[in-house]
Image 1 (cartoon, rainbow, N blue to C red):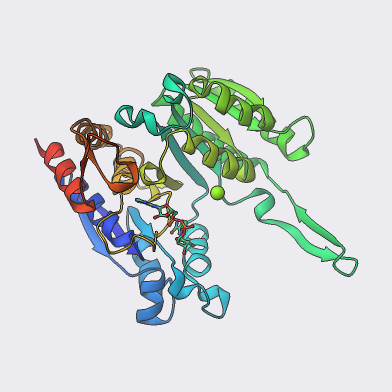
Image 2: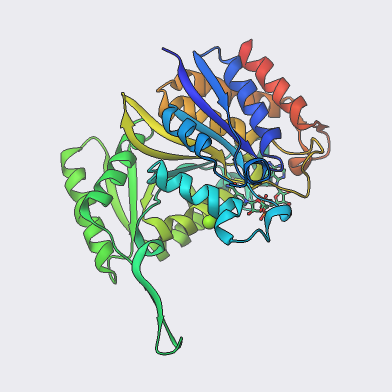
Length: 357
Ligand code: NAI
Ligand code: MG
């Protein structure tokens, strides 16, 4: 049966890059159905809400969601704040779709090695950060001011089931990679981190084919710059993952290259997920054909792999991306002397052609 994909392209360069991701998916000839819906500022303009009920229903009933980006200066001052695209669409999508696992690969594309801020071969990384997305200090209560506003409190809470489900995702992901997990915490200080370690060790004992080690978050931040090749899968909680995933991804050079997945629990044998580029709607270059579609296209490859178990299709997309770069095609953001400057759709066309052949 066909896999049903909800396509919510959103604002700014969202529709431009998402169109190229759909093109790449179609080129794989996998059995896929696409249904489009409005999200973000575009949805607010049309319906008065950045996440209309029909859009949410479509996403819930689909097997996977492909998101472009939402937001832009046009909607920055919308009142109430809850109707702004980022607050009114992104956050409810995550909670309504129960997307508790954020997966961010940082993989250097060899032809773009010179874009890495790390010198020479050190910039050659292939790792994945698996970040818990719906717990920890960003969601714990109480979160408040006391003593006439002089004191502020945030609360970090994790339960064993919360840790278990994210850790199990990471083990599953590691099994298709180098089978090495580094679990990152601050267990020398935090009680939640000690609970985190306990749960990870329990799972590690049941799944001895995966090697697991623990690392303190400050050390991990340092090791990512010193020797990022040592990492395969980094498993960590919400706030540490927020910071480390940004740090890790920048090793690869450009925001236009970074895909991501946010996963839920498996249903009907498929892992439900929302796939989107890490970048935003880039209003400064929207509508000019300048956007780099690679992050969106690589997000589509992640969808094939993680949600539909189609590793071969994902591999074909990734190889096509590398081949287009090897041919010297570059969008403006990663342009170098001696390369050929192409538009968003020219890049997408070139990649689709390579996937088909
Ligand atoms: P941004 O990621 O949209 O842009 C940052 C810079 O990177 C800009 O100079 C942009 O031109 C460039 N850039 C981003 N993606 C690119 C691509 N694919 N190709 C070439 N250049 C690219 O971040 P910014 O400017 O902070 O936010 C713009 C809007 O996007 C805001 O409204 C923000 O709230 C929203 N946003 C939405 C996200 C989402 O939908 N998940 C995530 C981040 C921001
Ligand atoms: Mg961040």
